[in-house]
Image 1: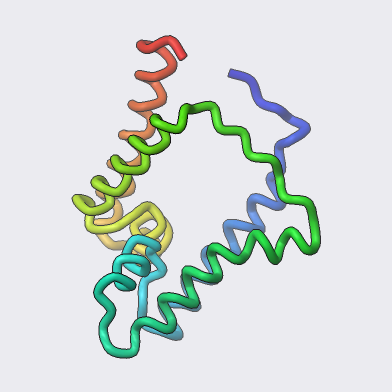
Image 2: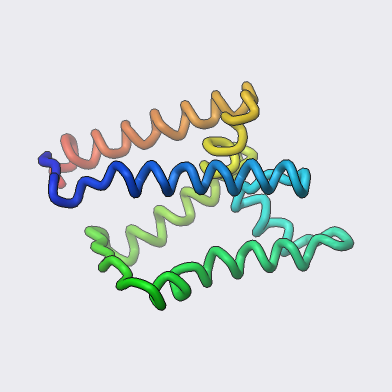
Length: 144
């Protein structure tokens, strides 16, 4: 493995992380809601009274942000080194894991850790260990 030092961007990465943290903090302080994507999207399928508008606006903001960004700068070209089938299977596994883990990485990793939630600490640790194990198995045992 090598690091492409010309693409190493610690300042923009730090700024992005700070914006995510600030947005999550503002969301919980102003709305009393956790900015976990699985919970926000899940609530669209079984909305409570008064919940539909903010959930739809949240998702539209996530989907629309790249288009707004593209008005100012060129979007980076994505490079995906996986087949369509592998992506579908991975997406389904993430969905199952999100269901079993009572939340997604954004809910547990960003919001839950900030609240010092024991459940989120365990879930985030499990996400990380599973990710490390998956990369190790794919790179070293399956030869990719």
